[in-house]
Length: 162
Image (cartoon, rainbow, N blue to C red):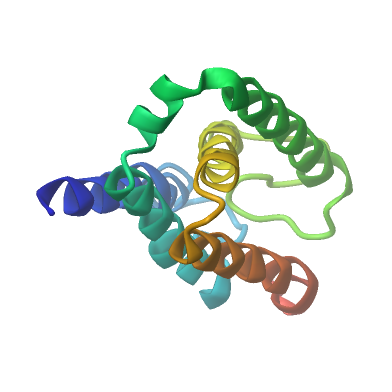
C-alpha cells in the first residue's frame, strides 16, 4: 500500500506540481497562461495519471515485463511516435499558447520538461494497455485521462483567453 501512495505522489511531484512551479515561478513575469490552463486538464494530470501509475505498481507490471519483454519494444515505439506527433502539433499547429509554448514555433524549458513527461507517461500508458489489457481499472484510468485530453484540446482550450 505504501508503494501505491509513493507512486501516486511521485507522479504528482514530477507532473502537475513541477508544471505549476515552472509556469508560476520561472515564468511568473511572462504574460501567457500558467498551469493549470483549465480544470479538466488539471484533473487528468492530478487524478488519472497518478492512478494509472499506481495501478502499474499494484499489478507488478515490472514482473510482467521481465516475464515477457516482447511487448516492451512496441511500448517504446508507440510512445515515441505519439510523443513526437503531439510535440510537433503542440509546437507548430496548436491554436493556443500557454506556459509551455509562448508562441507558435517556440518551445521553452517548460515545454521541453512537459514533452519529457509526456514521453514517459505515454510509455506507461502503452505498458498498461499491452501488459494489463484485462484489468478494467487500467482502462478506466487511461480512458479517463484521454477524455480529459480530448475535452481540453477541443472544448476548453479554444475558449481560454489570456
